[in-house]
Image (cartoon, rainbow, N blue to C red):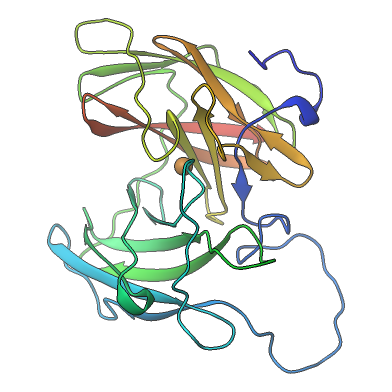
Length: 290
Ligand SMILES: [Cu+2]
């Protein structure tokens, strides 16, 4: 158990945040630098994103795009192998963080990624593509964004207060204590998970980790992502600056989540695990002090 580790260097979790240069790509940036006025930077972009028009809620909607290299060519080489930090993650949240969709679309010929998404309700959504390219000497991953509008009357919901215990699809997910969190300080939070019969669950790996913790900052929609790693899991830790953090689960029914967030404020955590053959999402509202 890494809980008692005093230094970030001892923490082993996978984190990737927006706004931190170490993770690369997009998002808000901290601080200001003055740069000479030169031609526009050659950057990765989302190309050919569909649907380009307004979306109907509740209806299966084809979504497709390519990741365009700075050269203008489509990215076709994505990192593969064990661990959660591979391929491409498509994460979609409504701007009020009431809903999350998390998919892993396959890479088709010519680098086109296609999937089908059902947007649950009207409103503005942030589409985040977390890209793990297989490029020599390149950055490990970066994020690209798109905003889409789902038609109908948008009634934003205020985030509910922190609630330690929740029942989702019959599973009881209970965060132990009310975590006291500070920006850029690693914390560990214990979470107990029991099945509908009250038994402690044994987590099965899903996308290279026992659990995925996806964090979005209210308002800015800054993004962060850590994992609970199985024993001997490879390529599972996340990096924030010089820090590496990972969570563990050494006892059935108990997982220890590594939390390391880049900025203060209100964050929504979506804790995702595969239970009984399907993905269960437990949402938490977390206050992070400076
Ligand atoms: Cu993940």
